[in-house]
Image (tube, rainbow, N blue to C red; front, top):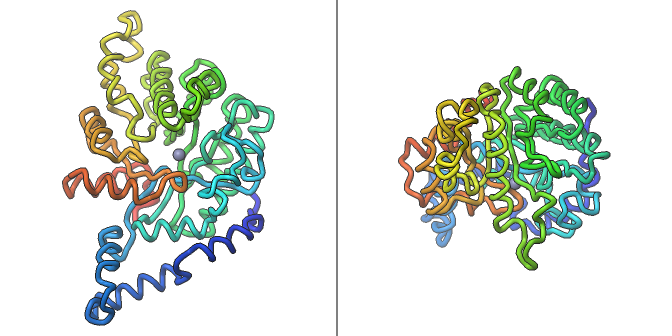
Length: 373
Ligand SMILES: [Zn+2]
């Protein structure tokens, strides 16, 4: 295990300071807010009451409690690649170019996020870079482990695998979970022309099942479907379609039944699966019934889903019709999506206080016991 330096992000850190409206540390800010609450903020600083109320509504308390299971990291190596995810140079994307671990923590504090479980950025370990994927996975995993060490309690880690390289994936599972103490494994919804339920990946899932691993499955664009309609980016719909493809690949190969100890997390309120699960169940071939012995919907109801960038009335309505609240996790997709987008949509949906607590942190703590405070 090596110590990872943040040195290559020095320039971004300086930019970060220039862009940030306040350079007050979060600890100082919390102390400041606490002091004002004791003395009566509006009486002391006229005009600040609205800001204070907004801050209070976002945070809910002075102690962050949320666990964000969908939160990205960007190692200097990843950022140096010209096109790691098939969407061009990451440094041309402002949200990425200005990202630093410190700024991530600052945004987490604003939203009451105690811990964010890190995963490699969109595109994961692209199949077209299969030759480099082993190195990129190790580099990203080392970088994430360094963030976990540098900010105690603030980050967890999903270790990435170069899934097309079976032997390297088995080694990375061992290194990531045993040496780096990662909290789970990050996969993507496809690897070139293979989706993760493919029989070729059975040895990897046998090992993940033996370890009772949490597996976070992030969407990406399959080679078939990146530019089907000019002007329509994959992020509009293709990511959500590919989440459903990944789930169907597990279903048709019986993977959810064969690897019952793996706890799967899918993203963005399940993509299109909440709407399509019943249709798939009704059309599932009877001769494959042993691959979903209690029915397709029963298998899908066992999965976990984060609400990143899908905390809106229609997405949450569909998801909550399919699964119980115990399967829903808070996630933000930061920095690709503003944290407030998910926070505000989640707040406005009308969950009960008990469900809010479960989604904010209770369900995640069952998956990651070490995050219990
Ligand atoms: Zn994401």
